[in-house]
Length: 113
Image 1 (cartoon, rainbow, N blue to C red):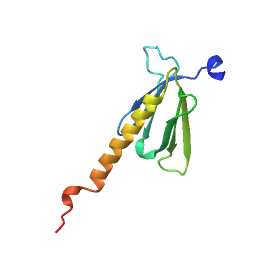
Image 2: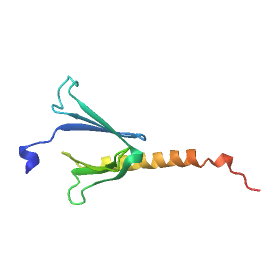
Image 3: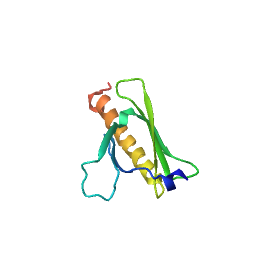
Image 4: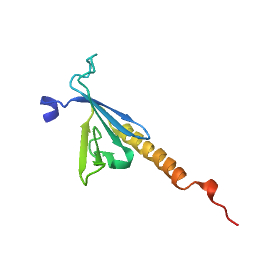
């Protein structure tokens, strides 16, 4: 009910193997992006993401502050299902983990005799 009468600001989430970029703007259709607020969350600091099991229009993720022992929960509502968004974050985690393992445990340096 609150979303209908007091809609949240529009935002764009850009997902990559590095993290999630959140761009918030009061007027989504405005050409001037100068009043846009932007945040970046590294994948290594994201501990959970998912959509609501009964209403997939809700999506959220939990982040750890990079320096402090604080956590934040970020929740979004969409006009459409957020399942593809959740799947994209999952794929980014898979690629990040694969890259991390290859970097931290290189197989070409291991020799068995």
